[in-house]
Length: 349
Image (cartoon, rainbow, N blue to C red; front, side, top):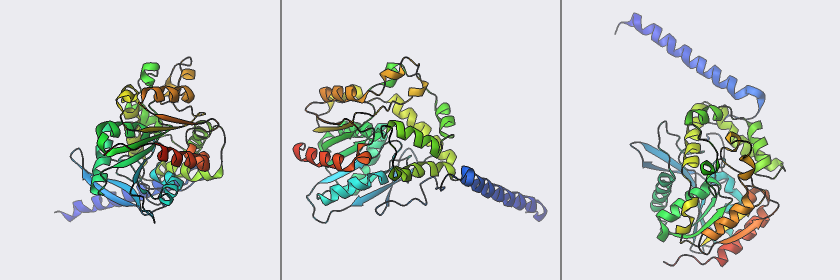
């Protein structure tokens, strides 16, 4: 190779690296709003050791991060915790402690596209695919039967999992699941992935905090929620902002286009609904016509309809809590969870 031609390439590479480093540092310090994390939440600590499960999916190798926490005094049961769209498995910290104290082995994965797991450049997201990924993880860990405890978007995934693997799902606990209504059918217009992506690129800690205060915590903010805001916002300050935003856009499209509400009557798994009544979550609400918005996310009504549609379902409501009762009032939530699990007869083997 002609060495004279090589020098400009080396110089250009060096300049590009410097430019990227400068751009990253400038973005990380933008607004002096908090820490920057990697695209797989590098730099953010989880409450328990994190392992990784690699699998081949859609012609590529992807990796699921998960926590597998064993109790001191096992009761022979396994609980699988499924996080929501704006939550990671780390947000289940207090629930993991409660369940392991009660004798459960607890497995809490981050789904592909979320948190510490792979964020592919190309992936066809579906709840079926996420259910298969989760099933493969449990198989690798030797878990043939489990109780699924699922929050928010995780509730949609848990319903799909229970429909696909009914003999391996002992109990189903849905914590303020979304998907209790079909937003598209109610008048929320279609949103392109490109529009979702542009919107996600604007994610900030202030925006997350405002949204969560009003929707998740019924207008009340406490300092202990802040680490979870920074957990999300930090990925948008880091060098992987684009791939984080792109995967988030793909996931929103999955949530909007794949309702599970029409299949509730097919569920045969013993089901417990734990619902914060002040929740108002509705995907795409701000895109909907003004007259449609008040009809969306009415959780007291949606929860009762879900109970009617799911055979034998039990419903516990928290009148003063919002979208995340497990974080807003952990004591009340975990008392209801343990009582509900004890009263809910598992699927027969």
